[in-house]
Image 1 (cartoon, rainbow, N blue to C red):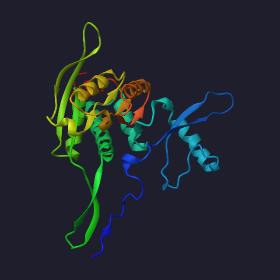
Image 2 (cartoon, rainbow, N blue to C red):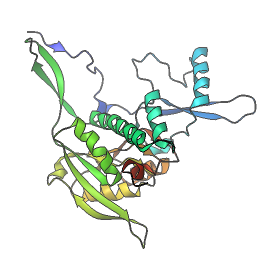
Image 3 (cartoon, rainbow, N blue to C red):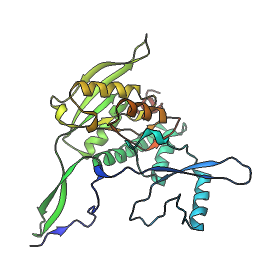
Image 4 (spheres, one colour):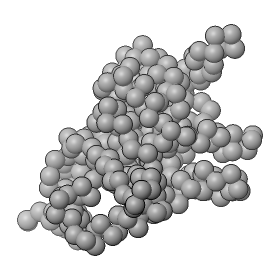
Length: 284
C-alpha cells in the first residue's frame, strides 16, 4: 500500500542543518529627527514575504515598516555574536508576553501565566533543534503514514533557582525526560560565580542537554554551568541553552567561551528583566 506523506512535512534541510534566521535592522526617520531601529525576523523561502532590506520592496512594504517603527524600537543584535544565537520569530503574541513580563505593574498571576506561556514556546523550539529519525506508522484505517521520531538520549539541566521555572514546561512536552540541577551563586568575597551543587543523570555524557536559564545578563553563571557539564563529559556542541531574555554582552560572552554551544532566546536587549526569578517565585 502506498505510504501517505505528512502534509506539513519539511522538504528542505533538517532544522538542525539550517542556517539560523538573521536579525535585520531597518532605519527610518524623517527630516532631521533621530533614527529608529526595527528588528525583523528573516522571512522563510515559502512565506511569500520580501526581505525588509530587499531593493524590490514595494511602497506598501515601506509604509508597513514605517508604521512598525512607531511601535517597536529595538536595538540591533550585534553581528559579532555569531550564528550560534537563534531567535524565535517575532510576532504580536510573543511581544505581548514580553511586555507583560517587563511591566512592573503586572500582577504576579499575570506574570507567571505569561512567563509559563513564553517558556513553553522556547521549549517547543528547543525540541525542534534536536535530531530526529524518519519512521513509518500504521494508522487506525490501515494506511501507512511517513513521520518522524525524536532520537532518544536527551535530558534537561536547570540552573537553580530561576532555571527551575522552566522545568515544568519541559516536562509538559517530554513527560519522561530526566532533569539535572546546578546551583551556582556569587562568592561573597570575590563576587565570582561559584558552583555549590550539581546533580546529573549518570550517563549525561552520552546525552544531548537542554540547559535552562531564563535570563542571560552577564553570562557568567551559564559559563560556570557549562564548565561543570564539560567536566562530566558533555561536549558543548550538544548543549542547547534555552533562555527567555538575553543581553548582547551575555550571549557574546558565552559564545566566546564556548563557540560550539547553541543559544535559543526570544529577545536580545541591553536591559534584561533581572527581576524574573524573584517575581516568578513570589519573593520580590
